[in-house]
Amino acid sequence: FGKMTASGLPVASLGDSSQLTIGQTLILIYQRKNIVFAHIKKIGYNFKNRQDLILSSDNLDKEIFLDLPLDNTFNGGVVANFKGEIVGLINNGIVIPVNYFKTVVSQILDKQKITRPILGLNYIDLAQTEGLIGLRDRGALVYGNPLKASPAFEKLKDGDIIEKVDDVELNSARGLADLLNNYKKGDRVEFLILRGGQEQTIEVRLN
Image (cartoon, rainbow, N blue to C red; front, side, top):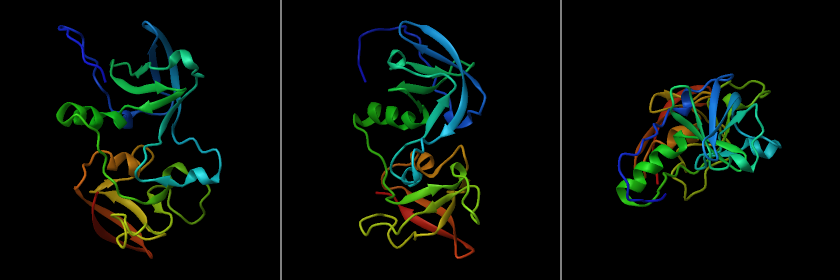
């Protein structure tokens, strides 16, 4: 973040990266207003091996994959939709969804520091993983029991499937970490989970 003395500058609007779709055309703006067009190939995670399937509820790892290779000349550039809204930022060849930054901007302006809520569990995003026989095609499969120091300890268990967060369904566009990014430390969150074939509601207070 930088601060400068100026007035009358145009303000870029932030879009909603959860509304992006496969095949959508985006505008890349980089290095002195250079512009190029690209299409979305995938919105998800960069799985290189089986261990990469295990995600943390406290990390924001989702990327926007384009049909255009991004070298260092694109670093610091922005990705916009046809409405002129910024939907992604480019860093080291990766397009980071802008939704990851929305809460950070307001925190910097209000409190001059960044804090993120912690749930403290590992999971597999079923909407982003193929070939898991007998499991659903969406939701977050809890992988391993949460540690004792975690807010999720004794609340969520290995094998639970989180279906909704405060009545918002998890799907390919809205993963567990994505939704938790909208909360603050100390917030109470209600999870609809599937455990042993039965649905139940669990409340967890985020650290």
